[in-house]
Length: 309
Image (cartoon, rainbow, N blue to C red):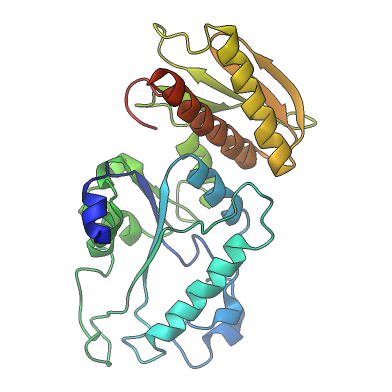
């Protein structure tokens, strides 16, 4: 079956669209050697592909919550003659390796579902890239292409970037304005980790939620509960026992220590020995696994009452 035809039969997924430079990886703070032979900011050397602090953990948490992850990046350095498409791909390859190295078992496959770049620039000198283009941000062409090719729903998605043109590209492609987040010194959020925390704890429209509480010693407290007052997800003992067993199984597989675990008819609360984003990823995985079990047993998900996450 043609890949695109297969996507047509699937319900479009929500995604996190991500700028690359200074959102996922370091750019502005790189040493001068990164810019030898190219314009400052045109990252075309894979040896300088360095992840932003906390980026990997943030992406794991977002992926575990059910979002597709798609990088969209302007790479006008190609139009300016600083490199080739292979240079851009070599930087992307280096970031892929960095994102998936030293896997803790929380996530063992490729984190990023798609990498898109626009090599165009109106002031470029290398045809055919020496022009503006619908893919170049602030236009939303890369996002529209990703939605079509990967089966994504822009209206349920988020855009994260360090510049206003990143946000504008998301809005142009149909991402709700309130789902656009600017990170960095000029943004509303310090970095990708802060943006991910807001997205993962955003309750609007979800039938269940993962609530993050302040960090406590020796771990992080998180709660998975139903937000539908008319629905009691764990009214029977068998379901409660299964949810607890799944939680302990995830912890055992991933090497996470559960310090406390309590469960009742409406929620499960755990204190685990990891930082907040990893704790959110843990609970998102628990939500997904227990939903699948409940659907197999009873034909309906355990937590998803109403719209999807």
